[in-house]
Amino acid sequence: MDIYKAYKIPFIGLKVGQHEFEFELGDKFFESFEHSEISGSEINVDVVMDKQSTMMVLDFEVYGSVETICDRCGTPMRVDIDHEDRLIIKYGDQTGSSDDEILVFGPSEHMIELQQFLYEYTHLGLPSRRVHETEEECDQDAMNLLNKLREEKDEDEDIDPRWEGLKGLK
Ligand SMILES: [Zn+2]
Image (cartoon, rainbow, N blue to C red; front, side, top):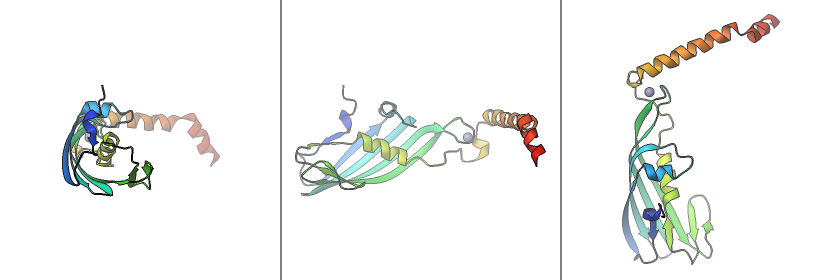
């Protein structure tokens, strides 16, 4: 079964003009990618496609929320995603890409496969720093444990004989 079937647009039969598409991205979708950082996904994607005689312009709005791990306390948290992106596909002699932003479709192409783009755009929508809004919202048990581990590590370092030896060299 092609799990990406729902994310393909057969564009050949579409008239010149605007077309709208909606996609839902759940856990199954993200689990199918090896390096996904996303779980607990409730993502919707609205796509407005402007089909022209020489190219297609697709505007994406990716929104919803996903579960990720808080950088501070290491427990699961939900983050909102609201990301916009644009994909431009030009018709050309050969399939390829003229640069990062523009895809070129040769005459034999008849389908836009969106799965990779949907995956990437969702990850682009993740905040670079993922933490609970305030420290109070963090999991206090996990924070206490982390602090304890950190203190123990500091103590270990204090009595590490290798460091004692280095101190003597000063
Ligand atoms: Zn947290």
